[in-house]
Structures are given as structure tokens and as C-alpha cells.
Length: 241
Ligand code: ADP
Ligand code: MG
Image (tube, rainbow, N blue to C red; front, side, top):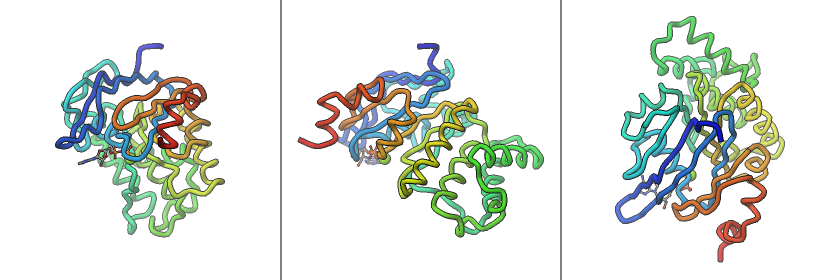
């Protein structure tokens, strides 16, 4: 593999006696869509948390981003280095319009003036193909899919190197999942590396170049998606014993 853009080395995270993540090591190549899957409670969201430092980093192990060690760094610094994420639960501002929501996100990028913030918002809207005539209406009135587009656009205004998405397909219909598939490919084609946690396996298998499977906090398998999903221990983890 070329020099990885992101790398974890034996990261672990415990909550009291519970080992949510145990000795997980993986590398993501620049430009890749890297999928992460595993049963409920297997530690997927916790892995995102410890990479981004929100709310805290790993108890043990190392996280490297663009050749720099980032575990232990404050979350805002990690974000400004170019790592951007969405959360499993959509954080939305129902009273703000889509355009205002992106403006708020742009302000958090720091150092942007109004014109730059507006420019970044336009680029982010275009990248997720957000309908121009819907940009000034209150977010509360947007469709489920438009809210997803807005959530992803918010994560893109900072022009991240890596976009991390936690189950973006949840709540979407089949045609909307197909539209999300296209959206993710477009964002990736624009040069953004993507880490994707997804329980909708059709989407995950369709867009991911490689997959990491977690089970009870440990990495069960990693590699080419079809090969990984054929492994007996992966099938067992999904179907139960
Ligand atoms: P997944 O995203 O794969 O469903 P999570 O990473 O959310 O799994 O959770 C992994 C395990 O860690 C679960 O057993 C969960 O209850 C536990 N966990 C996650 N976050 C916390 C927390 N802040 N405090 C205590 N336990 C947590
Ligand atoms: Mg989760």
C-alpha cells in the first residue's frame, strides 16, 4: 500500500470493565473508501470516537494521520488537520435553513471570512447535489434524504482529507440508499478519503474498496469486501451462534 493517510496501531478503549475496542490496527490508503462493519455493540462508533478524539482518545495504542501522531491531541486540532465526521444521530438545527447550517459549520472551521464561508458552502452543496431551491428553507422541513445531504455537506465545508460517516443509510429507503451510493462516489471522486460505518451491507459492499469487520471490540477480518464476507467466522458473527 502507498503511505497510509490514517493508521491505528493496537488501539484500545475500555469503559470500566468493558473492553469496547481491543488492540485494533488498520491502515487506510489515501483516496480509499474504507468500510467498517460488525454486529451491534461491536465497537464501531467507539473506534470513530477514539480516532477523532470526540469525546476522548484511546486508553492505549496509537493513531497516526498524515504522518503525525494524533492520539492525545485535542479534538478541535484533529478536526482542523483534516479529519471530519458525522454522528449516528443527526445533529440538526431545525430553525436554521440549510444555508445557515452550513454557515455555522464554516464558522467552526476557523479563520474564514464571510465570503470564504459562503464559497465553501456552495462547494459543499454542489458536492452532495443539494437542490438549489431547497437551500433557504428551514431544516425541519427537509426530507430525510435532504437532511443526510446537509449532514454530509456540513462535514465537508472544512474541506477535510478524510470524511468519517457513521451509518449514514439509516432511515433511508432503497432508492435513497442508491442515491447515497452515488453521493459517496462523487465525494470520493473529488479526492476525499472516506471511512464508512454501515449496517446496510449492500451499500457497504458496493462502495468499499476494503472492509474491516469488528466483533466484540476485536478485529475479526480485514480485506477485499467479498473475500471478507465469505469468511466463516464473519458469517457466524453476523448470524449468531
Ligand atoms: P457499535 O457502534 O458497533 O454498535 P459502540 O461502539 O457504540 O458499538 O459500543 C461498543 C460497546 O461499548 C457497547 O457495549 C457499548 O454499550 C459500550 N459503550 C460505548 N460507548 C460507551 C460509553 N460512553 N460508556 C460506556 N459504555 C459505552
Ligand atoms: Mg454505532
